[in-house]
Length: 273
Length: 162
Ligand SMILES: Cc1cc2nc3c(=O)[nH]c(=O)nc-3n(C[C@H](O)[C@H](O)[C@H](O)COP(=O)(O)OP(=O)(O)OC[C@H]3O[C@@H](n4cnc5c(N)ncnc54)[C@H](O)[C@@H]3O)c2cc1C
Ligand code: FES
Ligand code: FES
Image 1 (cartoon, helix red, strand yellow):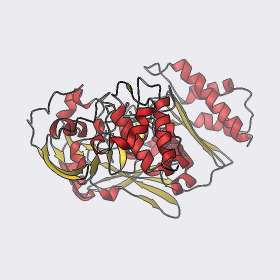
Image 2 (tube, helix red, strand yellow; image 1 turned 30 degrees about the horizontal axis):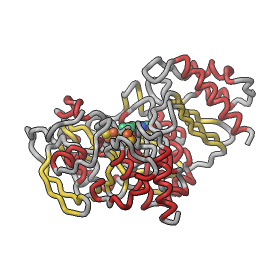
Image 3 (cartoon, protein in one colour; image 1 turned 180 degrees about the vertical axis):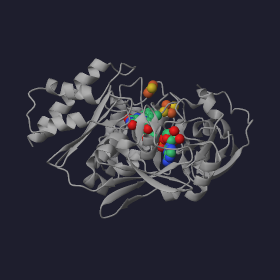
Image 4 (cartoon, chains in turn brown, orange; image 1 turned 60 degrees about the vertical axis):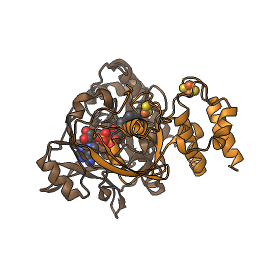
């Protein structure tokens, strides 16, 4: 195991290009059960933690930019982010507990690619984009097009995520929903992030498909003005957009049912406000 | 899984310098060492405990640059230039409320609970946005049922005027 510890992003990207080294950010995914993960001890690592230039929260007229080392706790404690993008704070506060929030990064959440992640759905609902860089230059990918399958994403071995951009828009309704075993320290069995600007909805679902994804059929169904009689009215759209599975945390049938109910009651409540 | 000692160094060591409870530390470590292992087996700071090794239980909680973190999930090489604080730095008199309130039974969770509690006491403004239970949610306890922990932490906050 060799650990590369660059102090500048330029240097980090050169190492990323020349070596087969796994990026290490907060380590909250990579170090789980570390003593038993012997195969991980045989890899090389590219430590990002020393790259202070990736530790920033920056505003411009039309967007918010989070450097790749921005943690959940950075967002929880930033009142301006909370005012403009409340779902980021809602989601961050539900990731593990403070010990995880202080170390876990938004970029690590994206790159880890879990279908049950909490950071990804809110970023995707807000129309976030991923800025990736290599020694060759930068490119920007909308998060909703970043994943192509389970843990498959638009990131080549010589690239790093360097930032996340979130467009500043006005929303009438916004909601993050996480259904887990309990309130703290639980991974989502069903999750959703939804925003509406008054004329149409963006709905993102987690834990119900190989990747976190937008749900165009659900969006169309709830934006078309036809009232919903009951949660079951959403089931056909849910079945078109997602494909939940049985796994250690839950069953497919439970996930579909719960998704229809949490979406239905969230929409009801928001429409009556 | 708890190692009995630091694993043999069959990889090239990494030099790391940080402050531990206010004192400068400069050591050579195995690149695979977690902060938890370095503290316990290289530096003899065995107050910090290992429970789950997966970031769930908080028994291994220490402060890095003033914020509670799980030392079982941190590669020691990332501690370059940081301030690390462990339970050994805490004056027992400052946590006496926890003893009186039934906040500890077997004691396995206690060093971690103490470190999170100390952070809350030092940042009472957190209670404007969080409940005590939310702030303490990363410290699991199998014995006390939590009420004693919350009572002890709350009592100290009151004594401190919050
Ligand atoms: C107890 C516990 C509770 C948790 N609870 C939740 C939860 O409720 N919700 C949730 O979503 N997650 C949860 N997680 C998972 C984890 O905390 C998050 O996914 C976190 O965002 C990961 O960020 P990190 O910086 O720690 O990633 P790391 O572990 O450092 O890296 C994760 C992956 O991303 C890659 N990577 C990191 N940064 C970059 C980059 N800039 N460019 C390219 N690749 C990169 C790494 O190579 C690795 O593959 C939990 C974890 C634990 C241990
Ligand atoms: S041992 Fe670190 S959180 Fe349990
Ligand atoms: S006192 Fe035994 S685990 Fe908390």
